[in-house]
Image (cartoon, rainbow, N blue to C red; front, side, top):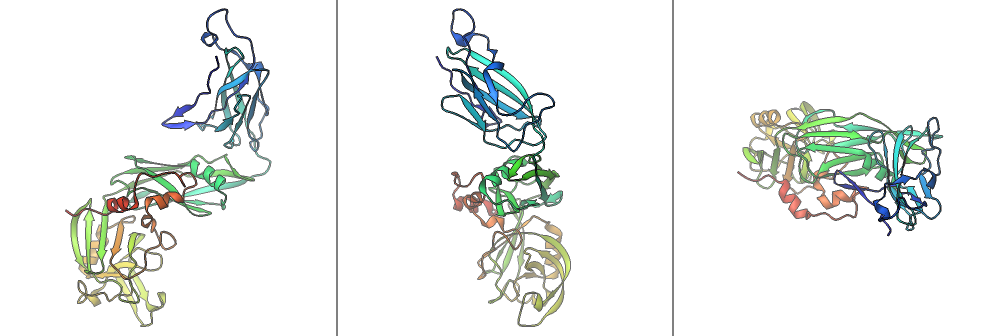
Length: 416
């Protein structure tokens, strides 16, 4: 009677296991062979790499284990000292297993091998494997952002890579090693902005008063040809209350929500025709206070040069929410700005004192273009969840349970 290969499940995820085959006489006399105590399978399997103290395996080479004689491999697990498991594939006849995920450099692995002989008797072998340094290597360091602190619930996590990573297999290695954990827990995913930058966000906004921990397991892992994972400083963020400001350019009013309750309605003016404010969700990038704004900075044909107070930046290209005392007669009635959202000095000071970096500012019913997801600040929330997942090297093509219209409805605050 043959024994099927086993699959290990750790923390809710299925782990590939490395398995060896072995040939040896059944143990015990009489009774079912599978009831016997596992025999020592040391002489029944072979590895393609040196083992033992003082001997180092090449981390550039996959680990391969084969069975001798007429035995077969039933189960193998390999894990390094940090708890990282090695993924692998077992041949259909159980005679060969090879790793499919890269080994780490300068690492110590413990390997447990289960086997079965021709009579179905079980065998066991445990061994220790040490890897050395690759012949040549370039370090791929990771810098997480933003800096540690407290942010609004719209703040994405960023990962800047020290070298470009282009092919999908290497991207999967990187993404699998970048860990984001929040308390309370939420579903989220990485999205590759380009070859050197990733953003992480949840399906919906972060919960209020959450703790977000970011770390990398990439150190010592082979990413690609002569490219190995380097250092990354872990990051801890917290979120404050959920603050969302929704500006309706058609009604010229901003409604500010805190934890889904309306806390203030403000008459505003947004961009006039030709300078229409961008539609969509933006994340507060900075509270800059007093800012000099000129017509040259946006290429406006009419000249202006002003010191503008209580300025809150929401795009890299110069869109702000700020005090505009010169347009109070139009606020609540008409759109007369060059693209910013203007309000009275009193209201602007209140807004400036209320919001923080990472809070959300959404504009609806403007004649402007849509806020792009990337390249002009954080427009990440303008991608529906299915589209966001397509930018993941691990999740692209896998099904999602949320329709785009459902996600957008959940992101918007509910009126009191």
